[in-house]
Length: 416
Image (cartoon, rainbow, N blue to C red; front, side, top):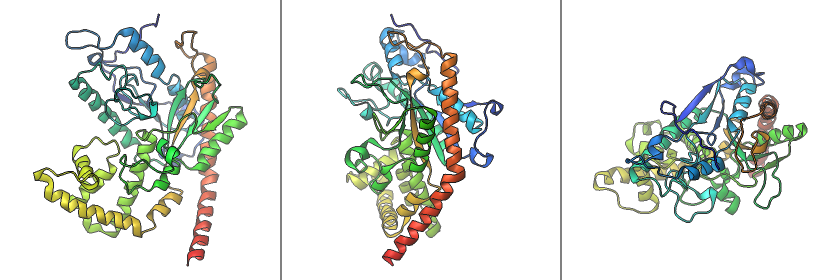
């Protein structure tokens, strides 16, 4: 029988910044870089507030045994262990963790209720089985308010970072029963992996498809992979799955790019900074979690030719002209190329660690508390990745910048 879990946490925040004692770590990264790195987990939460587990009459919304099984299956057991150790070894003062259990709400997907019959984990929305049919409309709106709160806090913490690392864990075996590598480094959106372009209609179509090639510097990814392999870990990239478009890793890249475009555009056209039409266009482009109603209405007006509400007709007409100016600016300038090659382009990477390295499971798949051996493994993994990041920041980035300048010079000479 599945053991019960204590999902209550009345006074616990849905998202938490966990403070660390930096004296416990080695501080492998120079002080100047520490404010530019953020480590977080989204799927190792354990809270499901009572208001979602019971209806207004006190009856369970989901049978307890069903909920327990879903929690065991969905949780990234051990991810917080690795995130803590990585942050400590980097010398960071904290790491972020989502406290809400993934069985209730997955903040690494787009908001919404997963449609019936969906079998693709990458296509799920934030509310998934067993709660898709169990919650009332009011409860789902309440859950998505939690989503907004968590998403807003994550956005604030990743906004000014150079390197953002999401720690996840995955099962030991593939569905075919073959053993998975110890770690997987995931840096490509699923849609781009399938079609070599970003899927239409998810983000704004002026987002360059070429930026979907990778959410992370390949040099950083390969440096992490190399150091882990040298230590004895087996590592793979972008397998057994890619990044869902609704993941923090993908959404943050779109947000970073349009923030960069906005800075460049407003430097060229400072008079647009206080223009309500341009302000709405930027809100739409930066609305990567698709939760703001007015920017989404503008998106429908621009790309699906939907009618504007009477009170918004004038603003939307002005915003359409503003949008065309932003699109023309992107087409005429070298912004996409500059951003793609810039050493200061932020990197977002998902690191999957095999669950059995961090958490012992019994024959029924139930987790036991982390052992000393599991804690040691998390320490080693964190230290190796931190060392790789140090090498990337101290050495690889400078070489990348020199190579980029040399390549740009050759391109200009060839096209001049």
